Length: 197
Image (tube, rainbow, N blue to C red; front, side, top):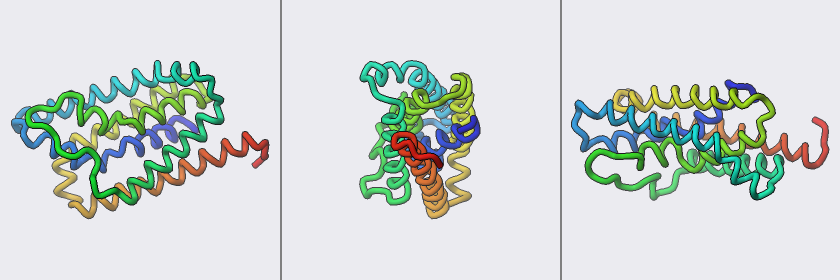
């Protein structure tokens, strides 16, 4: 995938439209004058976590001696499961209740934006990307910037799209993510089975 494709993949996994309700719920007890500042701080923390994991997360996988194909196939399966949950969400919701006061790291920075899914995808990309490493860093920053823009407009988007509109957008993103995950699985299965496309 090129930089744009990788950025789209990371953007879909961070699921900004699905996180709008979480951001609004977590910030409802924060003073209105501080909400934008707190949201910005949490988004910067999420970016730091994503970049930190992209830099050092592969060390754990390399220590386990996993092959490139195994990592990519596992990443495709994880993406598929994430996408299915976006399309068919469970009754328990994503994070449950948030504590009173200003949130710090949890739940806004992680697991909302820099959650296990995003971190798993970064590990997969770090071990399977054949281009220069700077392309991954640029893709992460582009995806984060788009996610941050959407989440900083959370109140406006919730009023504009409404609950049904947000659900529709999230499910559409889930459909795109399913296609990306199946493509990732097929590419790597062809590599393992030595099948030429």
